[in-house]
Length: 166
Image 1 (cartoon, rainbow, N blue to C red):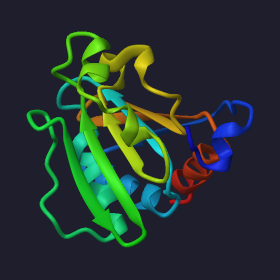
Image 2: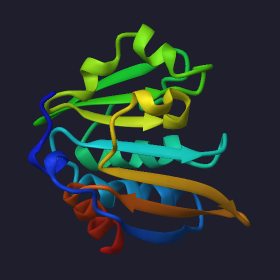
Image 3: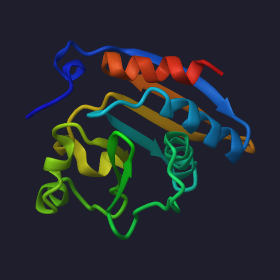
């Protein structure tokens, strides 16, 4: 399996917590995150239905320059965005019943090489998914959302630095 150099390094455990007062703040966080996205990265998005995962990804894609309509691939399973130097795949595993569906769908190849993989509902694929560079968890917090970011690689740490830069 070919990974960016950061994936071969020991696991990193840095994190960041933030508050997002509304969907616009969630999109702005995605735009900041876009500045740190590199080829070969894997970012996993966790949270309940409606917690803002797709909104955050929409902001990230806008920050990378896409003008396409960005929708959650709940029914299609994956959407491809070719943005400048990146082949970016947006996955939604909400409909998976167990991790065997990941293997049955033949998705492992997407996670090799220089493609960027953004995954909603990674827990539905279980241990079949490789370790992410960054995990983001969104939870309800009053009218807004709380976000927790956990880096697992130096590339993930660079994403956390971008999140803190606001």
